[in-house]
Amino acid sequence: MNAAGQIVKAKEAARLMVRVDNDTNKKVLLDLADRTEKNIEILLSANQLDLARMPATDPRYDRLMLTAERIKAIAQDLRNVANMNSPIGDILEERTMPNGLQLKKIRVALGVVGVIYEARPNVTFDVFALCFRTGNVSVLKGGQDAANSNQAITLLIHQSLEAYHVSPEVMQLLPPEREAAVELMNAVGYVDVLIPRGSQGLIDSVRNNSKVPVIETGAGVVHTYFDETAVLEVGKRIIYNAKTRRVSVCNALECLIINSSRLGELYDLIAPMVEKSVVIEADERAIKALSGKYPETLLKAAGKESFGKEHLDYRLSIKTVDSLDEALAHIVRYSTRHSEAIITTSDEAKLRFGKEVDAAAVYVNTSTAFTDGAQFGMGAEIGISTQKLHARGPMGLAELTSYKWLIESNGLTRP
Image 1: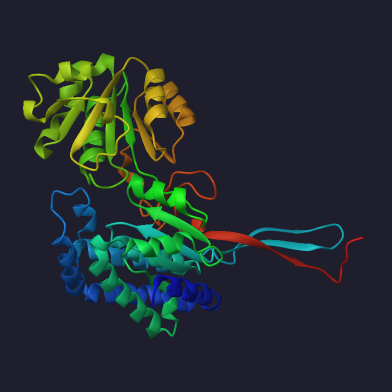
Image 2 (image 1 turned 90 degrees about the vertical axis):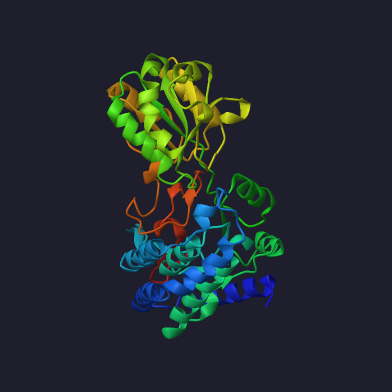
């Protein structure tokens, strides 16, 4: 069946999805978690076929790679989602009007959720689990890079659905070719919302070309400002973790902003980066402070493209400023409104940074690595929304719902 046919089937399956009761819904996800752990070797074999086609130096390689540990963590995430209460049917508001009109505002599924993503097979699990738990049908369009992995994962999902007599049509994996993405972006009347996950180029393409409503999960040009009052050891831990924990993820630190009064401690602040061979792209004042200390082969002069760039690699830009105002101005200019942090002991700076920085997640004395649905207690996430309409930040169960009004009376008519 071609992509257009699959999208039609997804729309038809949305009616059936409404009938899946909570107990069955939970059992499917728990079954999938068990099935995933029992098939680790099969998943790893499929993933190896994908990895063999990508150079290990590609920044996407780490995102593409599955390991036994990562698969076990995915299985646990599935159990976490299964054991969370589904928000479907929750009453958001309830009132009776003076004329006897009874009103209820209740949570409902969005309907058919389309996701276009690149080399991240874990997304296949996450999207299905979150959509299924909220009564949504999922239509996934993964990239060619992860085609074998995604097919193996989809087979397990369909087996779990069939084991509990739920139509496998509620989860559609479209062909990896670009034509399938075009079909999805034009599926007006069939797909209720489209979520792109991947590079800025992918996100821009979907936003500019989709006729279906889009929730943007933006790229992460993430900054951390180390101010004049910050504690060195605290900053050293936070900056190292935010930059090197996983360089290929969207919450990784890409630009360190340092107050000029702390340049004398800059090398001490970033010294741990040497063991990871992190390339530093420093502005003029920062490069002077690091010369003769940070390895010459890893120290570069910052250029015009050093700032506002998602490196997704062992590479860090450094910008020197003279004040909080300058730091905020730099963030305003280059931020993608994903995650931003300040390291400080000043209550005034904490307050201003939290109030003035326009981002989905704003951190004080904390690593930006925490911008993650599981870390926020959501079980998993379908993406990090950087826009303001409908959802913002990690998108979990509640963010995959809308609402409708139920109205009842004793035969009221409007005069």
